[in-house]
Amino acid sequence: MKEENVWEENIRVNPPQMAFMLLQARQKYIVWSRGTGKSFIVGAEVDENVRLMPRGITTLAQATYGQALTKTLPSTFKMLEMLGYKKYDSKTGTGDYVVCRQPPAGWYLPYEHLLSFEHCITFSNGHALYILTQDGNSRGPNADYNITDEALTLDKEQFDQEVAPTNRGNEHVFGRLSPHPLLKHHGNTFLSSMPYEPSQRWLLEPAKYYEEERGIQLFDVWNRVVRLQMQLIDARLANDAGMFVEIWNEAARLRRTIQPFVSQDGTLFMLASIFDNIANVGMSYIVNQYKVMAKLQFMIEILNYVVDKIDHCYYQLSDQHKYYHADNDAFIRDFAEETDFSWTKLADRDSRMDADCNPSEPLEVCFDWGSSASFMEVAQPSHFDWTTKTLMPDRIVDNTINEFFVKREEEQDTEVNALVDRFAGYYRHHANKLVIFYRDRYGDAHRANSRRTYNELAVARLQKHGWTVETRTHRGMEPPQHDKYLLWSYILAETDRRFPIKRFNAQRCKYILISMNNTRVRQSPSTGRFEKDKRSERNDSVLPEEATHFGDVVDKRIWTKYGDLLQKQYSFVDIRV
Image 1 (spheres, one colour):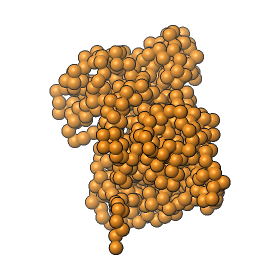
Image 2: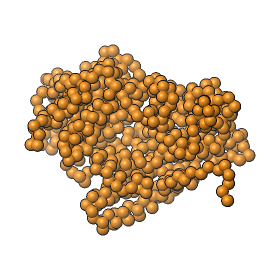
Image 3: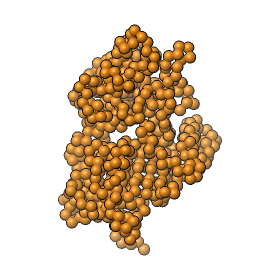
Image 4: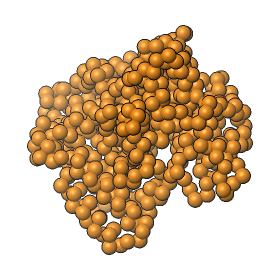
């Protein structure tokens, strides 16, 4: 007999989600790809904490406030609404939570006294989800649990100094001093896509217990599975059923050897990819993503390939100080208030939410028209260093603020239009509709099936979207790789004040940084001069994280703008680095 006043909802979970819920641990590190169900985990953790710890506090630690409002919370509350949670309606007096405001009269409040609810999402049973951000509101009340989504954007040292010490509240209510202590009390859940910078490797370090306790080389086996899955897709496209079954079985066999488990000290580390969610998304979706995405993006974003910075890198980028995050938190907060914290509208990001984009100044763009995919860099120089948050009145700070790329379709014009349309859509609110267009000289070549070149098509498309275009072209043909290597060496050293300071928005320019950190340098056997190792572009057996396309697109603009400074620098002596 069905019990009255009981509400039921069937929610289908995939194997990694089920494993996460069954494997109880205090410290959890979840490194999953897109389409695997990370938002389910955040929502499930919040729901569990609300139910198990009424009047407790869960901190949501993020790099920026804008990141919490535009990325984490929209997907989290989509999940919670599936479970029946409703935003409080003051007209009807019904609902389960309020966002960043005083709870209604009669609701329970957290045990920990809060002076302000400005950064809280409060539930009707008194549990509070307290938003902590590393760029402002970084020190919160004593808490019972912490959740961090997009953990790869954290400054881990700052987290350990400011957030971790606050995870210490209510031992007598939920912890070791209570009659019924909770295992998860004072724990952490870190969720992330695959780290791609050296400074983010802390997210992968907890996985060492796989080898220490069971002799499992987790990352090596995982990447072998990813390579097999790439072959699996190729077999599907070739309609080779026999090969598909053979590869599928081998990938499944390897996957069983790295099943997740909890370490002896209560740590859970999990990897998962979209193939773990294939029952929900379907093979056709995976194949479609493979067709429309660049191979590098697909392997990392969809299959969760483990990346690392190579030795002997062409670009001498530092681990951290060249990268920054810049959410326009003031605008995002005002936008959230105006839309009554509409999670759908907050998730639809545009350039107004980027603090490093000055809407009154032009944007600089450059393209790399590749054989399999095309790439676009968006930059805007200023005198503000977003890494140190200092004004540099006598130095140019050259900021790469965004990236776009599309995979080539059968109709070549579609590729140009799709790339420009993505740019124009994101910057549709930009006030100064002037683009400084740095031409790719190879994009000026005429094609047999069109009267217009790639560059001409891109300029026309920008103008159609209402942009005024000014073009810039470097002198001569493609400059020697050795000279570009020297130019980057001077720029990244930051010691010669004639050269700009170079910064990258790490949140918006992920694949530029992956490409640059994985571009090898070699010396020409004939001349001894430095050059990029570009063999990855011509050899399908070389992993795509070694491809140089995104580095090339940044090179073109940098050389056109600053190459003359290098000529003056060694006009008398050819400097060797």
